[in-house]
Length: 337
Image (cartoon, rainbow, N blue to C red; front, side, top):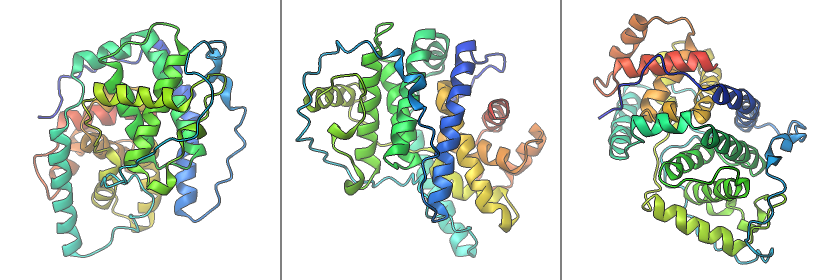
């Protein structure tokens, strides 16, 4: 069943808004990177390397154990990306196709819906607790900032980046990090990103653990590997995730009726989806709901609830999206973007 019961009165904490604004630059840079890949351009890394501005409240905490940098033998046994959640940059060559393509898309979406329902999100109270705890919010901000910058540096897919934030959120609802332990936050960020890369990137694209930037922290390979085992245990080894990117092609083909706008609409949809990374309550909605709301927003920022309802009911597949939840996400995404 889809999560419901979200309260329109619940809004970002001040810190949450601050974090979102600071992450926006990273999100836009990542989306620009995706656009360049799709257009066959070079990835000239935008000279933003006044990067680590905020990374380093973390700096002086090098007493993190982890031993010396003997980072040689990282067995990156990637579970090559069998996931259908693409986020990838390739499959959307503007969706034309005839009726057969449409029915194939419908079948594919039904399959994805079954998978997303099977993997439950956080419950609503826990999601709100995370958003209302200033230290957890700050920890999430530092971790997500690291994930975005490092994902961009390694040219990981948006699927990998989004999946790593899902792992981060799922870990933080069951294990707490002591207030102020920035080294532990960095270790968790490295671990979630490395696990997501092993799930979603091809084997040849998975860096050795020794290649992950850790700045002033002294994490050796075996230390990160032990943290990987801990995260896997906490997540019950349930690492397969459906993300909103799996649905973007489908919804762009249904909601954007101008062929000339489909590519730009998809890129805008990706940017909007990435904007939810700082809000665990939004990420807690089913991926199909987030994708539908983000696509509708990319197409038109002035929709009423009644117009959203018309668009959802016009879909060939009925009943898998609840109007109230799509409208809630549309409304909150409009605020964020």
